[in-house]
Image (cartoon, rainbow, N blue to C red; front, side):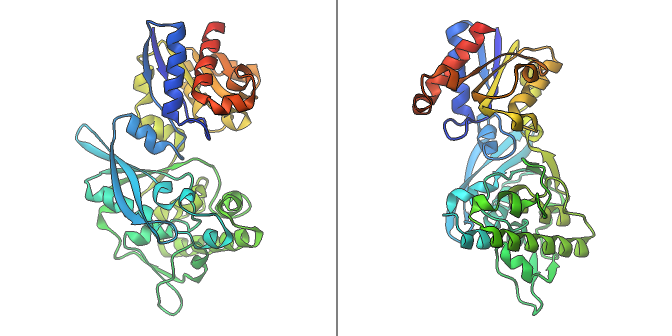
Length: 373
């Protein structure tokens, strides 16, 4: 039996690679002769870089500016196939929430300049294609900082360059792209949108995720106003509409790129699936296992496990799902070709025990799901 194990992360407990390894243990307890392949996945946010590395990409590092100007070492990846180099960058590695202490001040001042420096490093390494994951960001700057690292100039009404940071976008009156890195014109830029939110407004970047970055209500309102102003300036300068579905990902990171480059927004899971060649892996599988931390209503929208199941179903391959907890009804799972499912919380005696030994209980849940299939 050929078994493909392709989970997302169990956030807070196991990375996608760790979850895949634990599920493999469970598979081999039931089918010791199985040929098992693990293929960690992500939905275009955090975990995208790890998925690329697990698929054979080479890890690279660069010293760049963090979201509050502090110097940080950020990891990115370079994947070479058929002579074509693809860089995989997570904006969180240079401009992420994990690099700051969330507060109103940091929410207003954080920027994406370091993410632009990572793009420059990728171009220096000969990348013809750049994949950008946008989850876990600290900034709400509409991608302005990243493009400024690549040569964009943004001026206030007195002709001075405006400071970096989301709130400073309110000062922007002119954007000049004559100094923009010329290599951006020939590179393919693919931005993974892990949310459907627009750039600004009630469901936009500031209102949707600002609180998690430390912004209180007045700060979220200020950042939203700044993003609306930035969108208006970008559209006036380039004629491009940037406040589109998905532009709110990563603090509005896609906006500046949609205006000044040929970057395209893509559904996060589909982009990662293409990157790791999921379809080719499915073609060589008799059984698929997938999973994530919580399988609930949100999993119905653009999330990895059910998307994997749907692709497997289209090929007539049964899928087994393992998750930390499962609240979706059985009929919703069956409709996507899921033959069996098991929850870690149903296997462990207590939630505390499950969190203390997540890998073992994922293995046990996998075993239980397969035995009951």
